[in-house]
Each structure stands twice: as C-alpha cells, then as structure tokens.
Image (cartoon, rainbow, N blue to C red; front, side):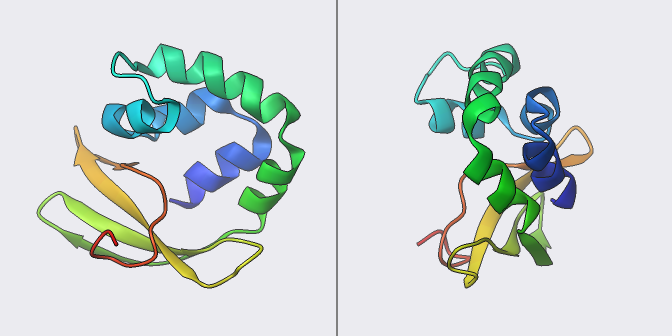
Length: 109
C-alpha cells in the first residue's frame, strides 16, 4: 500500500495503475471498458497538474491491514482529515492491489 501512495506522490501513473485492480480503475474513471492502458493515459494527465493530490499522497500514513481469503482493507490516514479510512485491496495473481477508493469503515460503509 505504501508503494501505491509513493507512486502517486512521484507522479508515476504506470505504477499506480499496475497496483490497482481493473474494477478499481473502471470505478475511478467511470468507464466500463477500463484497462491499465486507459488508466495510465488518464492518470498521467491528472498527476501532471494535481500538486495537492501528490502532496496529500506523500503525507498519507499507512496503517495495519486486515486480510482474509484474498480480500481485505488497509487502514490509512490521509490529509487533511487524518482520521482513519480504509482502502479495499484484493489479491490478484499473487500481488495485493488497490481495489477501490478509501471508505470510512472496513465494512465498506
């Protein structure tokens, strides 16, 4: 998870997309035909101009993970709120990947 936020902070769109599931990419860009290539193209544009997003990612603290049967949540504290949020993750081909946007609780709510 720390790799994901470091990649955002560094503006490394290909790495961010590599660390995301296809369903997460589809939801983020609101495209049913999402692919990693579409993610890289769109995210490159976003990260080029989103200094505040990159700074926020740089300051994000990654906490403990709760993982079960190929799914789970990783606790994060992202500015400006700094209160705990949870990033859903999924095991895909032996690697944990981001599987959605941060949510306020581990039950997805």
